[in-house]
Length: 109
Image 1 (cartoon, helix red, strand yellow):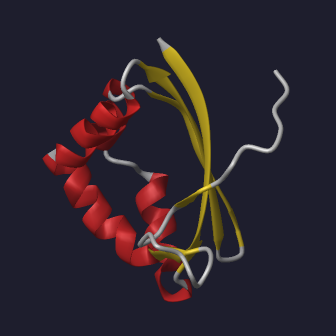
Image 2 (cartoon, one colour):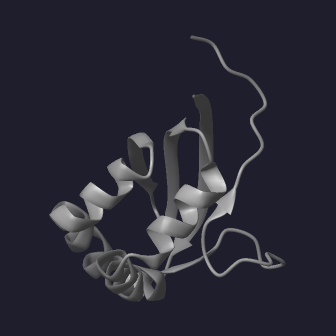
């Protein structure tokens, strides 16, 4: 069993702030179930101004396979279709549509 930590960051579109926060105030049970089934634990999203910071831990044997499983889930796809338009990458030169994965610089248990 592999255990990994992930930090990620993106920006919230100001005109979509209320919508994004409302969605995350009542995350769909099917989305939470899929996240858990795909080995994601301790998932937290923080917000300050238009910046979103996400943190989660992965516990499993094949992160890439679990990510593909999550991406194939119809409920998760519908969720992403609602949340993705609320987000933009943190940096202007990003090669991803929203969340940018951070490099871990330090950790203390």
